[in-house]
Length: 314
Ligand SMILES: [Mg+2]
Image 1 (tube, protein in one colour):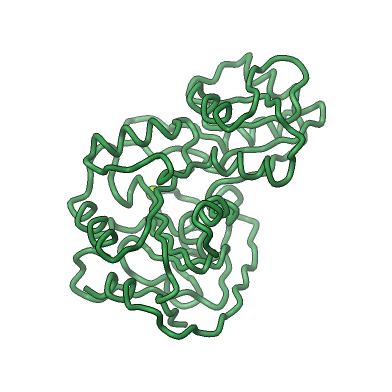
Image 2: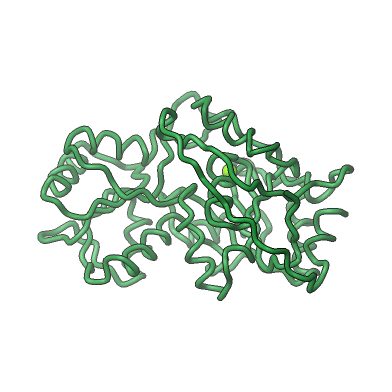
């Protein structure tokens, strides 16, 4: 069904593949962000990659010419913090299998990450400096029954190098095999990834529009949360979200990607913002398992302004 955009107040922008590729900013990104500013729409950059801290992303965006502030970045580590505060408020001491940047991020939020004795929960992130000893110690604490949280489900991290960058989802699978326990998995496409953005800005999910290049993470998260989903190429998902299903069923991380936000910034044909009444999606970490995701159709609200409409039709 066609979805009215007038209630959207804030855009959630995926980074790699949407506003840049690696270290190359897309030509359309700065004009797109400038247009958002002129329209009075806020925006947050979002990523599953928990190997880097907030300041790392701020520095990278500044190098690319985007004057982002810390509160405009939201990573899967933020989702971990949000989850711990909401569901395990007694937890202060963490056992972390993650990078020093991720540890700093958690410590800045008030957690003790000493990897010493008596941790209260285990957090697994994209630990690019993983050692065998750390893996084994992490498995031991998980086997003791502590809450087991994975920052995101990605099995590999995209790279243009001749290697597979083994990511958090693969670490979690290894630990699950060793311990017999499965983690609570946050990060895209988990809709809780948007909770922190909503809390920061006092918004509801339906007031967010998520722009991203991956159908089975970015778009699936938006649809599961009840936010507006905007494929970065400006194309719709197809009837019943069939592009999302097709990408997820393939199990190939290279499929299900869209093109950069040129679709929104300069596409000659008007991009469409649509959302399906319901769709099936096979989660990328388990292509056999399918979940039926039903979205309630909401009554259309009277237009308040035409900001987003003009954004996607120019
Ligand atoms: Mg991306």
